[in-house]
Length: 242
Length: 118
Figure 1 (cartoon, each protein chain N blue to C red):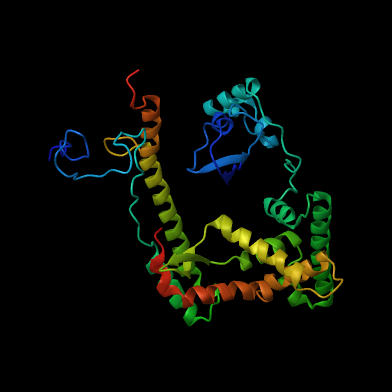
Figure 2 (cartoon, rainbow over the protein chains, first blue to last red; figure 1 turned 90 degrees about the horizontal axis):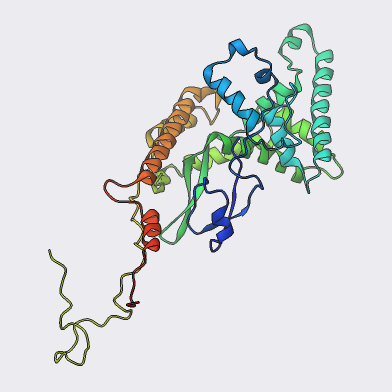
C-alpha cells in the first residue's frame, strides 16, 4: 500500500527537500501534506493467515521478511483497515466517498442501511415471485452492489484538450481505477441531487443500485451519454498525444 | 564547426567598428541547462477504439453485445500504459551519453561558474 502524496504549486522549500527523498520529484510542485513517518517505516500487515503459517512452509523470502519485521519500525494501522472477512474494499471506498466532513460513523451507518434496504427489497420480491423466477432473483446485497457499479463503469472517457485556442472533448481510454471512481461518483451524485424532497439517502441509493443492477436508471443513462459523445467525437481522437 | 569568435563584435573602447552583437544580458555561463524538448507521441489504440465504436453503433450502445471488442480495447490501453511507463523509466535513468536535465542542473549547482576572481 503506497502512501498518497499531495502536491501544490510553489517554490521548493528545504524542508520539503529533506523529507521523502525516495518520492519522485515533480517539477514546480512542493509536497504539502505528507505523513509524519520517515521512509524507514514499513506498512502494517492485517493478514492473519500470514502470521499463522508454520515455519516449515515459509519460503526464504518470507522468512527474511518476517525476521526483518521484528526489528524494523512499522506504521500504525489506520482505523478503517481490518483483517475481518466482512471488510470489502469497494464498500469502504464508497463509504469514504459518501462521507461528509469526516463523519465516518454516519457514512458507515448509511451504507449499512442501504445494503439492508437492498436486501429487504430483494427478499420481498423473492417471496412474491413464483418458483421459476425465484431462481433468477439475486438476494446478496454485496453482489448486487458490485454488479451495479460494474454496470455503471464507463468504457471510454472524454478529456478537454486545448488546440488552436479551443477546447475539444477528446475520447481517451480510462484506467481501471478512474472508471471505478467515476461509477461511484455518478451514483452518489445522482442520489444526492435528483431525489424528491425528504427522501433519505439509503432509500434512494438502494433504489438506484437495483436499477443499475438491471441496467436501467439515470446512472446507466449517463454512462451511455458519455459513450455516445465519445462516439460522436471519435475523429478528434488524433488530438491525443499519449 | 568551431565556436564563432567574439573578437570585435561588441561595443568596446578599443573597437572601431559598429557593434555586430548587442546582448541584453551579460555573456556569462549560467549554472543550469535548458530542458529537453519532449517528442510528441501519437494517439494509441485508435483501431481498437474505432472497432469498438462500430460495434456500439451496430448494437445501440449495449455493452453485453460488444464484450470482445471492449476487452480488446482495455488490453490495448493497458499495454500502451505499460509501454509509456517503461519509456519514462528509461528516460529518467539517463539519456544515451549524458545526464537528464534535472540531474545535470544539480551537478552544475555543486560547481557553480565563478564570474569573480576570488
